[in-house]
Length: 326
Ligand code: NDP
Ligand code: GDP
Image (cartoon, rainbow, N blue to C red; front, top):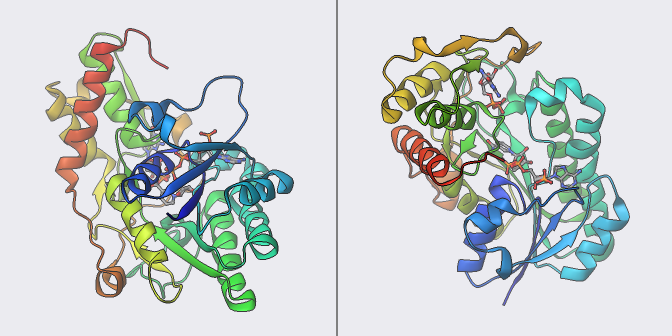
């Protein structure tokens, strides 16, 4: 039985990946941060909390990273931990650089010193491309437009460096946006599906949004975690873009979601909120995942429409069965 260690177990991707690896027969350990409230809702929601080993570790703290690695003795390490919200990175640029950027170097150092043969996956991001116009694949330049994007470029480059300099089996998945019913509530897709469900059930009247013309390449997180695992099963480490190949605007997501929720015309309840606008935003992100398709045989399975429907239906059901929101 192989051992896997997931940094960022409690997040959207950590939860889907843990389920995926458990189904493959892995012994799964994952890290969580100390908080004043419970942080295992996602693992509980898909009923896997009692099947994984949880280890307390923070990417700001080298000792706790090293100890997580020594305790789990992993064959495969997946780093999904990050301050992952672009919007917050403008307000907390130093924290974002420390966790999303330097945190990855802390893990790589701990891997080099303790388990140099372990395979390592780094969660790189389409945010690294910024507003670069043209095909976004593994060869395209990174021109990040947010502190988050800048930190991810550092993490990507340092992972590549450890691969080259120390022979660490490090792979970076350059993932475009991926969503699900487990997505954080501040990301635009989940904010929409969650608030529409509240409006439908009379718990909320307005939905406040920022730049609804921005376009993203949105896939389903459940499909994307499989790509992470596939990368680590190859003979040689490499980097891969993971994307659907089509982009849609926030407005399109909103229109479709409003339709699935049966709420008529979104103009009746949506307000544009200047405070959600970013100092710099990326207008359109669409990825070219041809390399992943050709070399590792991965392709996105869930369509945009299926994704929107899944999220809206989940949140309506959730609000019907919970009187309080978390
Ligand atoms: P989430 O925000 O859902 O999960 C992030 C995880 O990181 C959580 O488990 C969080 O813990 C943990 N974390 C945050 N800060 C620290 C810290 N200081 N020390 C240790 N752990 C920490 O993100 P996703 O699951 O959506 O994304 C997974 C990874 O993929 C992230 O690195 C993200 O940047 C990257 N990515 C995501 C994309 C997407 O569209 N989802 C696209 C491209 C890249 P807690 O639960 O306590 O907050
Ligand atoms: P990101 O691509 O990782 O930044 O994912 P988000 O879901 O946070 O944002 C996607 C796009 O939606 C960005 O261009 C945002 O500016 C835009 N957007 C428009 N309104 C909102 C909003 O209310 N919240 C968020 N998070 N993004 C919004």
